[in-house]
Structures are given as C-alpha cells and as structure tokens.
Length: 169
Image (cartoon, rainbow, N blue to C red):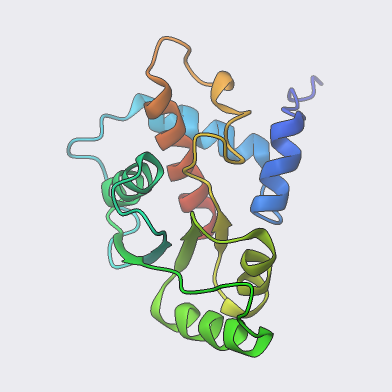
C-alpha cells in the first residue's frame, strides 16, 4: 500500500501553529476540491455563521481576501478594530476573548500581536486565526501545492476557505 505524500514543509509547521490540530494534507485536499467548484452558485456551508475580523485597515488585501473567502461560503464577516495595546491587562484580553467567542463562530486576527492572539485563542472558545489571509501568513508555503496556472489570490482564497470549512462548526 502506498502512503500519501506528506506536505511537511516550513509552511506546515507555521500552519499547525496558526491553527492547532489542523491536518495540513486535508486542508490541501479540500483546497483542491474548492478549485474545481465555480464560486457562483456554489453551496454555502457556512450560512448562518458569524466570523469576526480583527483588523485596523478595512480595505487591506488580506481583509478583502478573508471577507471574500468567508462570504463565498455563506458566512457573515464583521470587522472589529482591535484596541489591544502593550498596556492591555491579561484580564482585559481574557474578557474581550470571552465576549468575542460569544459573538463569533471564529475570529481572524490580522493586526494583533502574536502573544495577544495566543491569549484570545485560549479564552475565546472558538477558532482564532493569526493572519490566515495575509500574503505572508501561515498559508503562504502551501499555495505552490495548488494549480500553478491559477491566480495566486485564488489559491490563497481556496486555502482560507479550506481552513474555515475544517474548523468552523
């Protein structure tokens, strides 16, 4: 019996840190399926789900990519300007994480420092991502595994959608 090829790469490690417990091979396989499905008229498996997008720039490329990826799956995305600073207490961050976890089914952090993302992840009770949609984010090392003839932005979107499908319940 042949074993499946492993996609162990620096990107795999980064993705595992960004999304604990994620199966990188399954994410890539799902992204391959999404590649073959036209976006128009596709199923909306995340209909009724609410996602939070913590970002300071509503019009950044990563913000638009995340909104499009989630929207095509039927989810609603609310942009929230993070107000965390180095002076924010652990208690403030925990309280904010709890509130965000009650409001959203998952949270994408684009403009939040890594230690704060970790704290949010510990206390939100929902998936918390650290820059999935950023061009230099944890998915950057996996885009080369998808159809090279397609646009880079599309490959990144399919990977973000794959992560959302694997983690948002």
